[in-house]
Length: 218
Ligand SMILES: [Zn+2]
Image 1 (cartoon, rainbow, N blue to C red):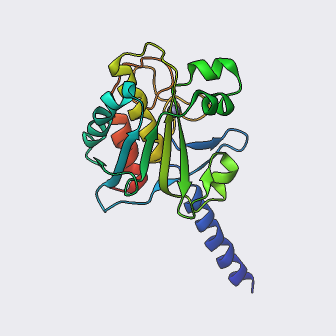
Image 2 (tube, rainbow, N blue to C red):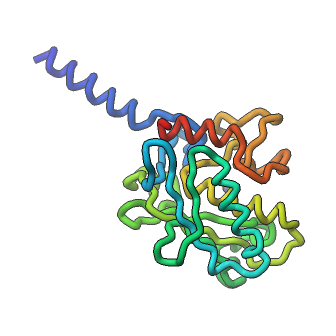
């Protein structure tokens, strides 16, 4: 009886450990409990993620750089991104109205400074937007909607490309690589998933490729 309980305990421990194994910079991290939720892009093969995207609903400022972001991710050995029709795409980019942007970011400084936001959905079409909803989700990302600021803010074409590429990284399960509360990368490490520091990396870097390799077991 005691042995049986012990075996059960070990089995449970194994599953708990498996469930919380952290391989990389996850999208949702809870500093209070030092734990992450491992969200993974569902559409994949044994060697890469399949990411069909659509940019039909971007404004002209961003349609001009949309294909650059798709190409940027295709530069990763672990991602096959494509541009496809709305309906067969799984990552949809759009420029919302200023009203939508105001409602999403009621704080004025957020409203004017945030360049993009990614809404991710699990395989039950439930939106994952907080640590708690991530924790209770299927943890498999089926689709994402990426909204880009409708404000014109003098971003260069390369900066606009960077925004789309960075947000697409969230869609496939990558969190911020410089999150100060969770294993931030060195200040010298190049990464498209940074939020600050040297933001001159316009394509996925070795850091992102290593994260994807570890997270998906490629
Ligand atoms: Zn981000």
